[in-house]
Image 1: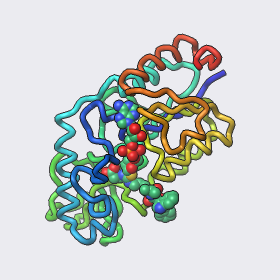
Image 2: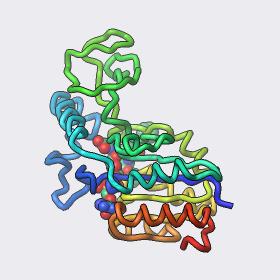
Image 3: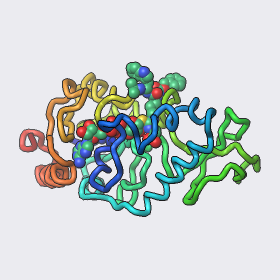
Image 4: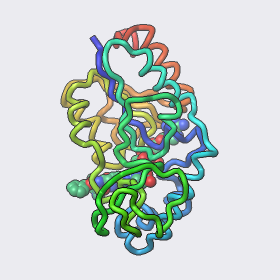
Length: 245
Ligand code: BV8
């Protein structure tokens, strides 16, 4: 009996909402070199460049809406009565929340949060931000100025909620990966963990991902089209995998 559904999402689930995916032909991300805007070293080199990069991404959130794939996951969470539905997302946008999902873990951080950077003498506190972050902002918790940074997990930093994710994977009955290239670890390793637990695994992507060999099933096409159909079938068959795949 299918009880707990574990879902991993990546940039691909937000692509049809108009948010560019992370890896593209140009190798640049929003016209920036990843090392300059998604590493602690890049932040040390040029904190203003990085702050403004995320300020732009944050302000762009107002221009995008959840797409049918986000809404399908919210519908699944709302209607699944056999157990839990957990969305573990690599994405930093708020589209899962705005679609109605509740049980979400942002393992790579969130655009709408900032943190008081411990390595800069800050207190480590995390709180919301909906406007541009400025170097003169002061931490509302410790009062220090200049210690605030985007609450984003950069390369070389430990992703968030790893203990919770390990527990959730160990209790999972179905692992669904959506719109991720399977390049970035530890997220890309979750499917092999699920495999070790003998949990059925399915990936949704435009094409097979780098970790396709670990998946039992693959459903290829735009998630905005494939995922709503899958969720409806999953709910109709009450998780009977024989009917599902
Ligand atoms: C850590 C924040 C350890 C920025 C991000 C060698 C081997 C293994 C690991 C490593 C290694 N060398 C270095 C590492 C570690 C490194 C890593 O994995 N590097 C990779 C590049 C090799 N990982 C880390 O550094 C992680 N930390 O390991 O810490 C540690 C231990 C102890 C103490 C301290 C530290 C931290 C990783 C987090 C980095 N931050 N984001 C930001 O987002 O602003 S990662 C970044 O990549 C994003 O979060 C993004 O979400 C994530 C993964 O990318 P995807 O989501 O998959 O996006 P991508 O564009 O790649 O793919 C999109 C997919 O969607 C495609 O497949 C496409 O086909 C599909 N698609 C497109 N449209 C659609 C679609 N699918 C369906 N429908 C559509 N319409």
